[in-house]
Image (cartoon, rainbow, N blue to C red):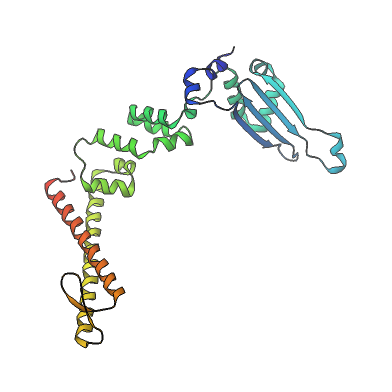
Length: 271
């Protein structure tokens, strides 16, 4: 039993179903010009299978038929012909991968379930996490998880998180907030507060415009008066009345949010 086969039968890998399928990797390619032959390479738990199809004109198709060569791991390490063809068609990286698999050196880390990868990412240092992110696409997706970078932010910035930092993390993500300098972060906090203030001013202008319109309609006497929210009488239709109530509810929520933001900014500064 080779080293690679022993890895496949490991209880840990069987529990997490790391190698659930018999096929580990598959590769396809077309021969370099002027040939158009099609090649297929399959790496399984016990063998390396190499198949090819000759692409020829119709009048010569009967002369050629698809072919297949199959080697065990021990045979592949000694099969110079198959190694040469794989290197010529698929490249040196694919050949090195097959040689490593046959020697029992498989890339096990990208095949681990996300639960284990996240646990590993939370235990390593910042420099190692950045380097681990550059290994492959699947690991990069796990390393960019929001929970990992939030944990990293709390480790390097101890203290209670205020509402503004959490709002910036919700907009830009914890990774960007972590790598942003304190000066730029303060500028973004100030910009976010200004946007909230402007939003409150726009809401107030809408309310004042609607109230002035209702007073003019009430003075003209064209429509019957309807009791509006807050005990005010305004001449409006049922749809307008509901719309204005919605605006006042939005304004009330916005004023509460701005009040909470101002209170938190006074008692708990960002830095």
